[in-house]
Image (cartoon, rainbow, N blue to C red):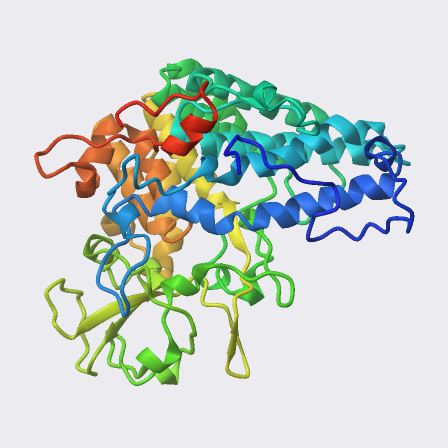
Length: 496
């Protein structure tokens, strides 16, 4: 099969579509969009499809960082990502991670939904605003991963002339301009049309504003946009309302997923779709008779049924080892005996590995249902992005940092001990990075955070980004030789 950036798909392959088509096969592509119900069916299907990319977003946004790759109950998967053992024969995400399939669906909706005779055009505009926001988000993932990538803004319907479908990589600056354009279009369409699809499983104006803050911060730092971009980011983040930090014990778990902190989530439900975090837990049979670092038998408080293919690095466990910081509980550390092992030490022979506790699922009569909603953006993100923006502008970021710390320490919080005091830009940048490290464990952000902070942080923090001779490895991902052979307009990523 040709490895072009497109995949031929029909309008009737969405998992979530409930469209009833007539028994005759006379429904043409154009006439499909003549019904409001058809457009809404495609709209729902886009979210079903997007949810299936959750695992990929997590891998792309986190596994190349310093967070994972430690001792585990089982042999680790994705070791090439932990070790950054990546080259043109070890390409971790082929065919651009299949993101252009997702973009086809979105482009199709953006082009054709306006043809549908909606009874309420404000609802249609709200849906279009969501699609522009979602398209901007996907291109943001692409540009952070590969740098220069093809820009495709039209659905692909006619493949009679395959040569015409070849699309060269656009410079990352041009991709970023397209992302910003989609963000602006999303905000324009949301204006006056916000009172639909208020469930956080759908894109929203607040999601677009969060993305705008994220994007302009990246553009300002990585692409040299400087203060102009930082001020755009600050303005966007300061407009976000209706969300707040919630107590840490009300943040995680299926029963808490409708909290006031989650801005945008991937929605998982039993008999519909389950998430991918089983790879960060373990099989119950392997750990039920073992103990945590307090000497508690695992079977007395935890039942999981996954595979500990991904376990945190020693660096991660040491960073969050303050027993007064509630985020220490992000991992349950597993030991062979009940002697109790606090603080954590990297050389303890009784240590077996750790289980991520944020998304352990729900125990239903001995069966684990991995239906936790997974946040893409939450209000803690807004605060720490704002702290980063303010620091880049030479302002004091301590207010936002301390809001996060105060929530993390709860009743243990002591201003003189745990509060942060403004320092130099370099010291502040490191403090914000460390705070994000602890705050967003397992949420697919650490690698992006390091890249956004600057090359020096990537190579200082991630030892696997230096080869055996101390040379720096490329940040952006390669593409396969087969992709280049199939499309002679494509060039290999620089550095490979």
